[in-house]
Length: 339
Image (cartoon, rainbow, N blue to C red; front, side, top):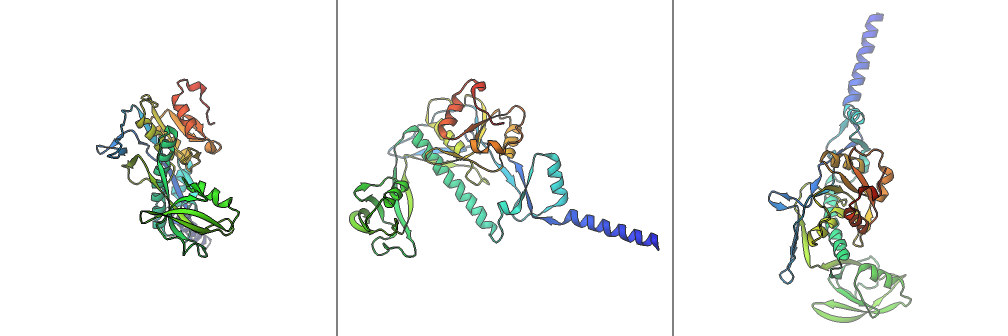
């Protein structure tokens, strides 16, 4: 009787252990991705293609070496990890385990998340292009278009969707940030503005309520060239810094890369500020596997780095100017380092 009970207990424990090992858990794996060389080619096409206009053809200079964008691989929304997979990840040390909700929030359609990542990638390309143009002091124009109105907008009957704002209170408008600053500084309840509607300029009077005009603005740029990234299955905003550097490398005679194998990561603003990203340690591992020797990382990510792979120098940068300076420096000992 005792022996039978023991066997039953052992069987129950075994079932529980098997169940625990196979039960899906609310986590995802983050693994090192394979770096992509923005100066290279994929299927015969440049990874980063720069296309000028008929009015202003763009000269693209030859490049040397590799300038890699870094990526990570994250468990897909439809996959559910099991205990043994998490244990294996913790043991090998090259993958991290993150709460599922960090990448796939509850009650959010996975397709929306994928679409958002694609949109972030496209936006990062535009920001990178603007940052490169600003750094190289290449002129471009920015148009502010009326996209929509807030619920209680006082200007719904004054403006129309598609109107282009040209001036506000007698001052020509060049950017959305400039317009916001002008609106905030407005003391009167009305202000004169100039718009372009149906290709004709019109003078209008805008209503100002609580330092707002109740209008949603989209930015449309007239740029001297466009960029096309011929990569698939990569999303998010973290390639901004490398895209900017690749544009600058291709548009200038100076050879910044100098036949080296370089990688990096970081978001970027049109003003050139480099922002932090996720998965920094996995990106370092992926870069080291690909033979990278110099890695440009957002300065804000330095505290997140616990281990740097052997042979990899990680240089913190806060902006595009610092990144360019790091590439120009020929003495590695003079470069700042994370870790």
